[in-house]
Length: 190
Image: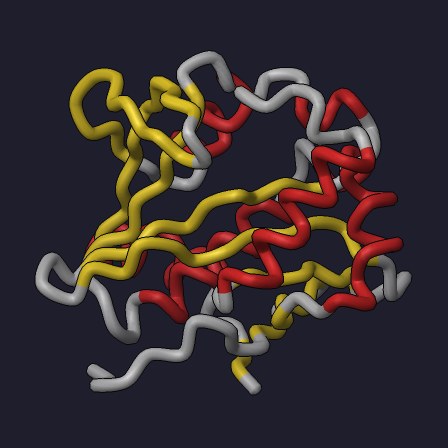
């Protein structure tokens, strides 16, 4: 177990590189996020608009723990995610603010991204949590598909002055080892 943590490593999978977000990612990131369908079940449904997405993007840059997903085949930016709320005492961290461009839905890209991020997180935590909006059934199904287990009922959370109801999922180191390592093997870290 590492004593220091790196919240913005570069992680390399078979098809996707996850790297720290940069200011010059704006055009590609907005292109990936600008389809209203990406956000239709999300609590902030107008995030496909430039001013609302700009706030999301600037927050990602400021977080010090956000990523850009790059497709190896095309070099295109296809989405983003970040780590949040590291709790050393509980040995827990959140993976959230994740989105993928629509062309990457329904296949195994989400699994690849989450697998790489989980593998890295389990170097310094025992549990990773995911907060999913109460009505975001698509993301809830995606969490279940990768082995997320729901924690209790709805949980309120206030971010940026807005309180929303969420379903919280968790994946532990043990469930990760059983589901991901045996199925896909570890990714590469640079």
